[in-house]
Amino acid sequence: MKPRNYKNNHLKAKMMNRKLTLFRNVTTKLVALGFSVLIMCSAAFSQNSEIKGVVKEKSTGEPMYNVNVYVEVGGVPYGTSTDTNGRYTIKPLNSGVYTVKASSLGYDDINTTNVKLTSDKITYVNIEMVEAAYTMEGVVIVAEREVAHRIPLISKDEPHVQALTIEEISNSPNIKDPIKIATMLPGVTLANNGKDVYIRGARPTSTQFITDGMKSINGEIGIPGLAIGAMKVYTGGVPAKYGDVNGGVIVVETKSYFDLAQEFK
Image (cartoon, rainbow, N blue to C red; front, side, top):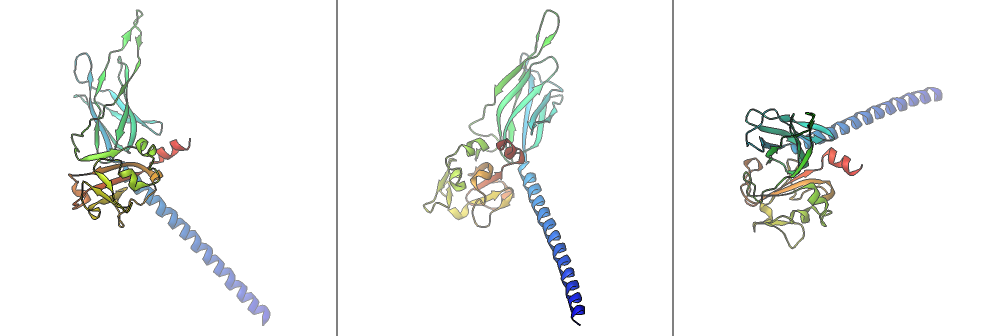
């Protein structure tokens, strides 16, 4: 009887080990799938910025057709060409700082630097093309011209919004404290407890935190300061998609893959 019992127990243990292995494999795959969904959702929420503008010839002021306008995302050009009215739109884009490049046959390449994008916002970049120089042999000499993007003090489409870029956040002395990062913006005041914030004098409970499109349940940003890629604060005129908010809204985006890849180069 002992050999038979030993054999039965061995078979049961073997089957149990198989079931445990199968369960672990399924659990691992489900966890990996969950993380993948979270990453894709984060990317979908963060890619909601765009660049618009008009390209004109500098000497005549006339709009230019079929000018290539693009930015580089992870070292790869991403853009479009202007229409018959010289207009262009580049979207969707992550929040961050870009250089908008414009090129056309017979004209110098124009690079508009320091173009800062924040979530849910259109950034306008108008470009003036300069005709390229010609040599005596008739060869066109094309040069690159850099133009610094001028950021308006008040955005015409979002006058009640203040924003911080990834560079401003990274250089902040409060980088390890997300709440204190928010207080760098005008109209945002830290409460005495060091956790809550007042937006234009409203009660802390009237402030809504949105991280990668998700509303905070506990009234906190929910991620470390080092993971923040962009932040903006609505001190008024809150969009309807954020619900009925009496105070203000603090919108936070995590760093994109390309931001993280750049840091670890």
